[in-house]
Image (cartoon, rainbow, N blue to C red):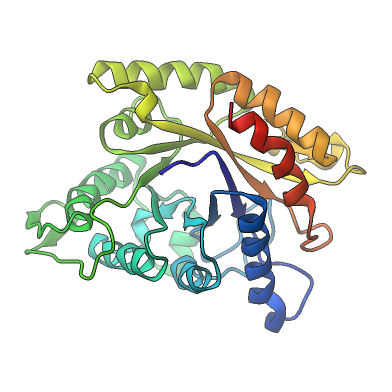
Length: 309
């Protein structure tokens, strides 16, 4: 797996009727594929997130939508950024991701995290628990999911999950790439070093140099070559030369780039790539004026030479 230039689709509010909603999603994925993005991601949420919209705005179930995108694309890798472990039994998630891998002919990525959106959990009846509870659930889930993806039949009895000779068949590959999102230095980064192929760093631009160093140290502590743990950053992108910094909510300013395609690419270079992060996943904001074809393509043309270096 290589994720150097990814595209996340963060919302489905396009100012159209619902009949045009998924055709617009397909159009974005096809544009990303044609432009040379190596991966396309959806959020794993059931309600829209604070800062992006109100809870009642359109939100598709991720794995159903990814299965449809697998049939509509040919080359891009597909996954969630990232799956909330608390929303599915680990055996169901293993089945969903192996199914996506079969449909896509080996293009699935399993992005996974603890789950964090408390309002969504409370509203829909998912147990939220403490931060420690959610991390311990993730540890147990990985003990079940990872062997299932490899074709093993794990039997496991833990505090949260119990399975007996759990199977996931059919499978297209013996290894589906694993990605975790976050930047916690005590739990997330060490877990990424131990189990994962890719770490999507959720942090501010000013924090990146330190996070890169912590990743290096976590890998070296367990005798892993740091170069084998890829990193990326999810960056909110407002591709519009008329946008100024004051449009960006304060909470997003350390994770957002804006302006013309040239300005967006330059900000990605200086704020992300120059800090030592391997790649970038752009999350274009479309809620201002709907999906506008061409912006993601223009940025890709400018970034691809930088990411090939």
